[in-house]
Length: 371
Ligand SMILES: *Cc1c(COP(=O)(O)O)cnc(C)c1O
View 1: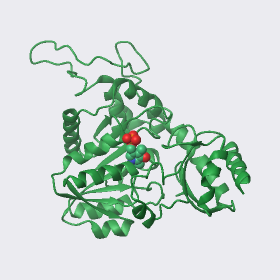
View 2: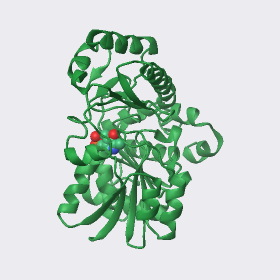
View 3: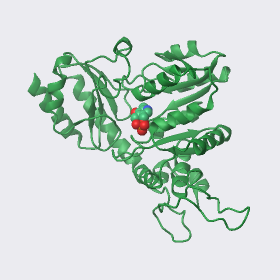
């Protein structure tokens, strides 16, 4: 029974479907019970059932945290109240004055957080545009490297392996935001990263109904330190949301297959559409971006869409289309974002699990209407 046996003997698809099963000898419950209890009875002075207070440890959250650790192949998994609290938790490790080297093209909320802590004089951020940029910027002064690959929204990839090799030389910690690819496509810890974070709001949850974050550490040492910090600061995932995340994870592998198939079909369609200037799709996963030849038509184009929803976020079963300039990346100053290619002609797509014909037909009729 339990994860240790499962971790060694079964495929990921099986592991996902079985999260929480075979864990409840008392009732045989297949589904993980939601433990709302905030506090737990102590058998006697100096003894504990292993659960004392829900911020420290909760039986429902523990199931999802263990599953996250297995999926990312780490030793400690933590479930947080949002992707941003996962980012904040990871950055609670470094002393004031630390230098952080980070991807230039970055989720807008992470950029905003970095700007805020930089303003307070906590850390100094160095932004780089590509793999060579990372390799050049990392030095003995670097405390940590923060990587998004592929980047959001320009979808450029870097080699985690190569960057981690350089970082290791300088004893800099490597943190990867693996929200876009999920551990089914990319396992950063296996490639040399020290810590993986997720906005579990996206693919891991998968249904646009849950705000959640995940942190997985490769070493027990870093994992225990982060667990201590999380208990201290308190941005844990609630029992109900932990259960929702378990429920979402069970179908992750089925969903990712369809997300990817749909993204490939949509990218193939967009490449040959005459109003499209450029398509950015790395060939994996369910996210892509594209640029229109004339950005003036974007408002009308979005209005015409009947199946795609014009909304922020990504990774859910419903297909979404986002305008990063005014939505996800509005907090990055215009001159900064345009300098690296995040221009007003750019749209970002998260393909859902609908039939790809319907998605393509929807795009086709919207292009017809504005041409
Ligand atoms: C959404 C997102 C975040 C922030 O996560 P929240 O769950 O919204 O707090 C961080 N990184 C990436 C890549 C994201 O897409």
